[in-house]
Image (cartoon, rainbow, N blue to C red; front, side, top):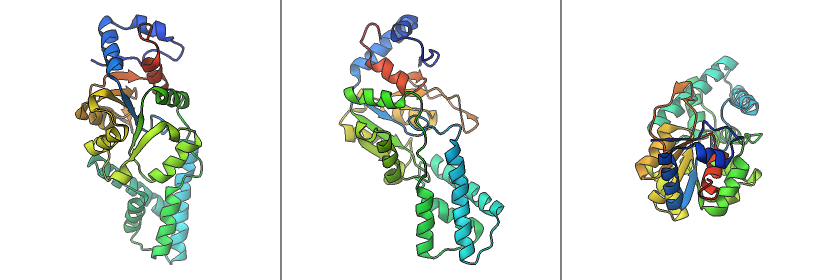
Length: 280
């Protein structure tokens, strides 16, 4: 049974929330809190906003395409904007294929997929420049509501690990973004798919996080927004799972993998885990 906390809005006090829970839900939540020794967190859709796509992200996608188009023109390829856009879409489809096979994807994979789609080649130096441009975000994506305070509060009580699937933007850039928001120091270890070679729900992603914080799976909770990767991966490892309530992902209804908690976000999870026992 999932403890449904997402139905409570941000104005609901901890005491009110506690009173409205069933006795069974209270007992299960108290047991989870007593056993908890560490927390792992997803990144996109949990800490950083990804839906709807921030306007800066949309603009940068166009900039990536324009940059590649210009590089191709400089090397004798006359590709239209629509052709490059189709290649970019193809690269995302390739990402999805790898993602569902639990195989990591990086900017180099994406750029090479685009070039193959366009039947084009670039010299090594030019290719490296395109990959570097694709990897670096001009503007940090925004934090979701309540994340900064929630993560900082959780870090005061629990060792934290980040477990993130990556696409175009690699871990080295994402570390800078977390530092920009004063969150990098909150994590004992950061696990990025591009550095591991696998994506969630592959067990290696969770094993590295647990090893990094020195906590057994049965004493750890993972929070994320995708049931197939975050909830299923954590549960398969024997961890507790908190799902950020998001009924649809990428336009499709999410399958149910029985999370222990359903919450509105990291802020609410921190409220639930850190408030004094008895009044929640």
